[in-house]
Length: 317
Image (cartoon, rainbow, N blue to C red; front, side):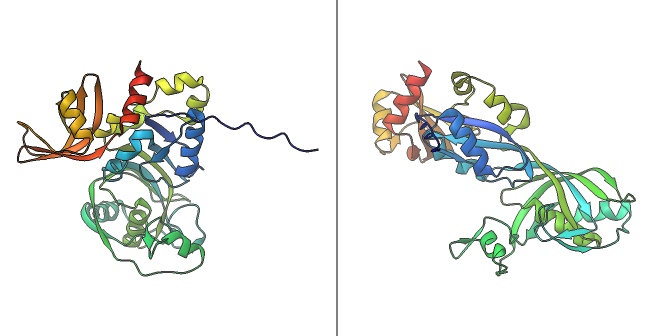
């Protein structure tokens, strides 16, 4: 018996941000595709990946918001993680194959001493099981083929490394940590390096992202919450595109100036120099794009298209 053809989803222009509390077991792209389907959105992207075994804050960008997703790749992040001491795996987390087990003999004082060494600027060697590219190919693709390639250490910054709890005596010794770090920090690598410094090895048994940039878990929705809502309620929960532009100086242009700015022309005005500027039109009030100001010139960066602006205004009507 031939299966009935699946109904084709009618896509629609959607512009804005969903803050998802990503569940365990899904890749960031799988989570994105689920929400994209729930919104029937035409265009979508995320702001950096979370591993399938990780949970927590994952900003998902739709339509015009995808133009500004890079800003949150660069943002500081905060995580809570559990390190399983004494067990080293091939991936640095619980998904990997067991490589080595060692006794855990470190003292609480030794743990505190080691954690102090991992606070501030540190060097990290990117893990083979990562999306970082080498010669146009992701490192995890080499790793799956059993190939180890040379990587250069990178400097990252651990702004704060807080010990939330430890169990050094049980059958499964663990450390519970909260990490606030710069972009590009691999928490799996941090866990492995801490385990190596303690002389017993370690891997991540749990990882949860609490904050990325200005976005925290308190503002996130779960997939179950989104699925339980009718479609229009889902759209009503979208954050506006300029939610991605926290920390930007706001400049508002009149209609004539706005039209010229959207065509890519620099504008002159009484503005102080600023690296990050969010530019809005005044009538109607709407985001036009980003810019920077140098010597009184407003220099366009990423711009919304007239069609995107019209679609946003229509969705707000």
